[in-house]
Image 1 (cartoon, helix red, strand yellow):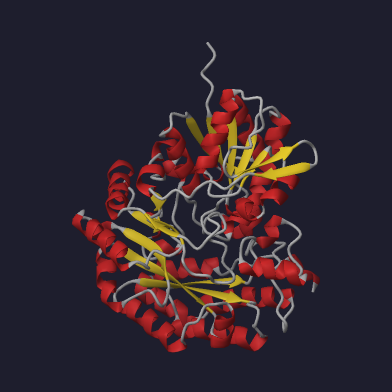
Image 2 (cartoon, rainbow, N blue to C red; image 1 turned 30 degrees about the vertical axis):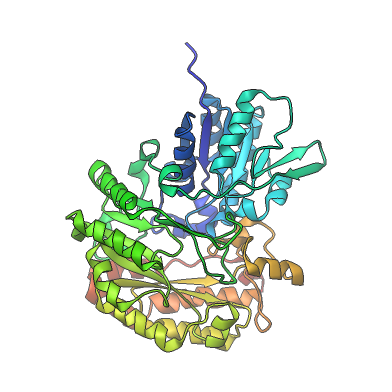
Length: 497
């Protein structure tokens, strides 16, 4: 007896090796795909049958993805390329392109819609270049369900009324429909409570989140409490799917209930709060912390979340720590105030140092995020950034090269001024072989990239840092960091310089 046809298959594409090289092995996180969850929940609530294929977590290649999709014979396939942070959407296009190509070779009759931050920033280009039938400009859930309804209706007319859809009208014309309205009732429409559709045993935290207890990386989950960001940093593309600087929040009650469900059903104690800016709205954050504390087991929990130097208030730190927030990631970006101002990140040096120390005194670890190659950077200001990172000596640090991600102000500036951009989507990955950051007026792209890679090793091989790690987390963690820093990324741009 033939099984009933599935309405919708959502695919989270893989390609970690091309994006991270050797770092994609055991060091990086494998996160539940947020937007697969949100779209799935939205569709299920509207009577659709849904399957999620998380090819990254299951470590399956494009051919296996295509075979699984073909066997399910869905009405619609959706390739979801949001990634787990704003910059990750573009680099996810590598795996998405391979999966779409394999699927069209295997089952050309199945319609494919591609959604994500990158797609929303470049919808017409994506539709023109990739082996897909439709693209989405916007966040996606409403567009997915409307397109599915249109396909299932067998309507003869074109899909001109599907909000947010980008489609081909004949061979040479691409149409962009009116945008879909943003969803504002996140609790009802974007709850994402479809954990039963995911391979929960496959997910793991970043290595650094479990310093001191490296065996606790599983089980793991990432949740969200808000969408969007009200700030306008020139290098950020977080708001590309929303087409505005919008900030929407879930109710704290729903957030806490989701944590409790994951703790009791799947044994999850290690969490990421995936919000671009969790520590922002005091009432929202305090209510979530109060709810987590009331659960009675917050001392077992290990959360990490994003904050800004100018949104963290010392008075709230004790409550954050009591609620299980053990790590806060701060966008410090540069050691030069002039460079920070040029990137629309106006922060005073003394404020940066002060808030990092306040966070650490509260028993919360800090991840310092730094960018080399911002528009006003020189070799000297990049050195200032590295020196600041070593002075702060945060428990972990991420070093990035400035990248003109599609959807960011920097991307529009790069296109307008004719700056050299990566020739492939993997070139937008910070860790790929063909990574190509932006040059500055004073530094070539190769100089920026080499400085970034050298900075990584100087920081993590620095005895002051290693001594702090051993004292705070133990010698096993120190040896883990020392082993991590032996990995040298291969770089085409540097090799050819």
